[in-house]
Amino acid sequence: MKVGDKIKVFAPATVANVACGFDVLGFAIDKPGDELIMEITATKGVEIVDIEGDGGVLPRDAKRNSATVAIQDYLDCIEADFGCKIWLKKMMPSGSGLGSSAASAVAGVFAINMLCNEKLSKQELMPFLLNAEKAACDAAIADNVAASLFGGFILVRSYEPLDILQIPVPEDLWCAVINPHVIVLTKEAREILPKEIPLAHSLRQSANVGGMMVGLLRGDYELIGRSMVDYIAEPYRSKLIPGFYEMKNAAISAGALGASISGSGPSVFALCHGKEIANKVGEALKSEMDKLNIGADVYVSKVNNQGPKVLPLTD
Image 1 (spheres, helix red, strand yellow):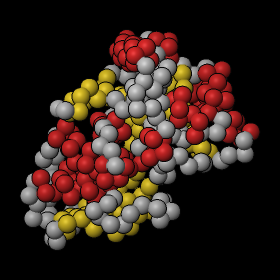
Image 2 (spheres, rainbow, N blue to C red):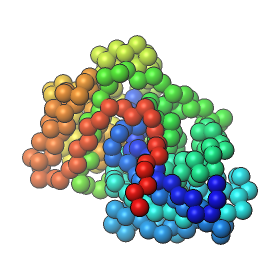
Image 3 (cartoon, helix red, strand yellow):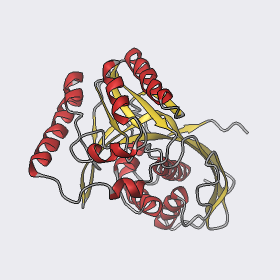
């Protein structure tokens, strides 16, 4: 690695919570995501040259942007005598519930780690990503960043110590996601949740997480669907999303295994058995937003098992 070396990478969007797994389950999808170009510099520190596609919303201050916070932590960890500059292309809006800040952070640390010949393992990158999430969202939650970094389905078994488990994904598991053009602030979505839940709800939620794990391991699509019941977040956050239950019912009627809120919302996701059903579900979700005259973007993809990847440099 030398001054002037460049790399271009992609980091995927993610679905967090997955109905039953509040703050502990997540998975990556093929699109949308973030693209990032990085160039090694002789000057220490991280410089943001340009951010495209964010509408001017994201901070240009390297101490506040999730990508550069994660990169700087990496450079400090390896005691680097060099720095880098980055160009970030956002292909999903902030506050979409699809792990926007997580994708930026993952793209950043993946890029610098690749340029440094993968000096650190993915597990060793996680503390940098959690710190970046805390800088961006005031909460060091691992489900989005872990899913984007490792790919596939992940379970955050523990935070202290951090224990990320990768769960095998059935071959024909697809996802339809709709991102309505409405604003749901993560802070508001957090504050609307109750501080305590009834013991009965905790038991049911735990049983559904177990059912989800068994369904994924066995490739039992019906069990995956039956496990997609949320007693913690959905009953409250659904109030922040116009037409949520209409979208959920439409998705299930179109053949989805189940549907719920992605992260803090407003995005809604549906897991499906097969591409054909996923496309129909995506159309059904969009139809409900059309009825309310609310614009929306729909994404249909398999669960992304790869995580971030290197892209060809075109310039």
